[in-house]
Length: 327
Image 1 (cartoon, rainbow, N blue to C red):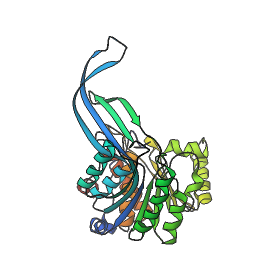
Image 2 (spheres, rainbow, N blue to C red):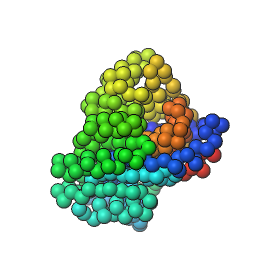
Image 3 (cartoon, rainbow, N blue to C red):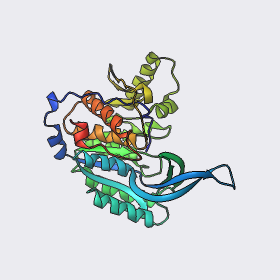
Image 4 (tube, rainbow, N blue to C red):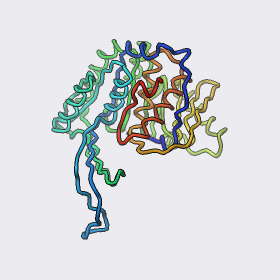
């Protein structure tokens, strides 16, 4: 649920004239998603008093929900937009892993999940009171090298039938072989979109497009004082990594696309935001679906910007429906 997409994404109209059959084209495409999956658990309750034990609210839980998170949320967003989706990841041999498998099956995600008995499936537990997130608790361990090695063999097999690849890196260890994955995909002339993590972007070299948020980009490239400096840093990184495009999502400042000798900024408009959880997943999923459907980078960014504006108005990890995006 990485996101720097808050609080103000516009819902500006995207031109449909050159892409009249985009929805139909997306339904014909198969997208391979690889990355760190997680289970998002929500506990909803009422808050009426402060604990006598410590200055914290007491939440009386009334209901709970379980949703797909991380790379699984990317896959869910793609399915919602009509694409066929294959998913490759690692989970633990535990209850949370079983729940993830069931949720994916119910959502028509074709998942190849490696079970690692040495780890716990990543779980993010959020406690919600009065429509606000009060607390988040994370449970996670990195997968073993042996499991990751076998996953790479499955990746090669699944890659052959994919029209586009999305690598969703949450820094949980599931993409240890990402450089090899990018190389294999590009050799097969597949576009590769990467949602990055950490400060080592060298391993993303050769990808088609990178989608860091503002904070992630600053961690790698350093700060900037003005738009000119930002553009210089962005273009330097894009050229160094050999990317076709670099998209920086910039919170209330919008999102900016950088291509060779080109810069396109998508502005935002103020709106009420409910929850930014999973907005980054929605952005890269929308980019992948629309690019696979035949749109160019500029058109894809406009759709992604619109999708972000829709999803931040929903609670928790959520998806955008085709009627919301394409109408």
